[in-house]
Amino acid sequence: MLGGTTLVFAGLFLAIVFLLKAIKVVPQGYIYTVERFGRYTHSLTPGLGIITPFVDRIGAKVSVMETVLDVPSQEVITRDNAMVTVDGVIFYQVLDAAKATYEVGNLQLAVLNLVMTNVRTVMGSMDLDELLSQRDSINARLLNVVDEATHPWGLKVTRIEIKDIAPPKDIVDSMARQMKAEREKRANILEAEGFRQSAILAAEGKKQAAILEAEGRREAAYRDAEARERQAEAEAKATQVVSDAIAGGNVQALNYFVATKYVEALQAVASAPNQKLVLMPLEASSVIGALGGISEIAREAFGGGGSGGGAPAPVRRTSATVPPVSRGE
Image 1 (cartoon, rainbow, N blue to C red):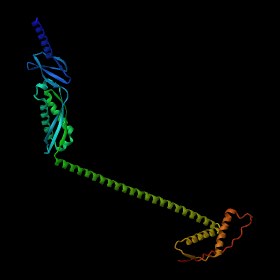
Image 2 (spheres, one colour; image 1 turned 30 degrees about the vertical axis):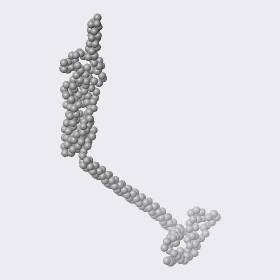
Image 3 (cartoon, rainbow, N blue to C red; image 1 turned 90 degrees about the vertical axis):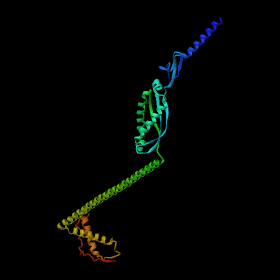
Image 4 (cartoon, rainbow, N blue to C red; image 1 turned 180 degrees about the vertical axis):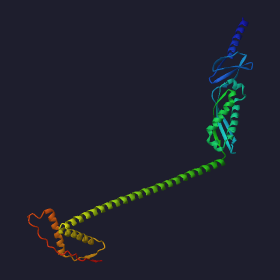
């Protein structure tokens, strides 16, 4: 009886151990490789997996999540013999757990060495200026080379980024001086261009002002000439009217014309700015005679001979002698 109970407990124990050895739970993001007597047979995906106890065993637990590795700093000599310090970062993901486990001994070390070697190869074939200005091109070239090299290992390199490129201090100082000189050059060019544009605009303004002034003088001269022409036409017409009146026997028109010119001459003499004192002996009879002639012409033109209808009063004719004019300074 005791021996049968012992066998039952031993059988239960062996069954429990067998189940524990046979059932494997694989977490999300991992793949387990299964080996039978040391040889790879298959892989267990996330979830519940069953293997043959005491025959099969778990070979490796491989993460299939995207992994990030820091590329340590290293010195690189460029094509123009400038030494720079470079570091970076790499992102990769395992696509085939069996290849990542059995095709390479130390996966992370292999990836790091491969990236560092290709960094020196790619960046060493470029000048320093290209190195500092073409990071995207460097990253793309490194990604293509490393991804192709790691494909037999069951990896997919998703991204390689160069984090820092540090030239020596003397080169940094030279670059700073060069940048300062370039900026000063551009500033001087812009300043000179501003002065040039300002001078051009000022000259253009003077030109336009001169053109407008010349046009103003031309217009004023045209107006003056037109006014003189109108005045000459009026004087000519007045002279023609007086001539026609004289030719018709009307002597009063001549008296009116002479009196008008006489009065204008006196006005010009009186308004001269360089005259201090003017002594002009005037003959009253001459002035009265001239005024009489003017009134006679007005009467004939507007009154038709007066309101009484009689004959016009005779006009006393006097000698129209022009008195001498003495000018005193």
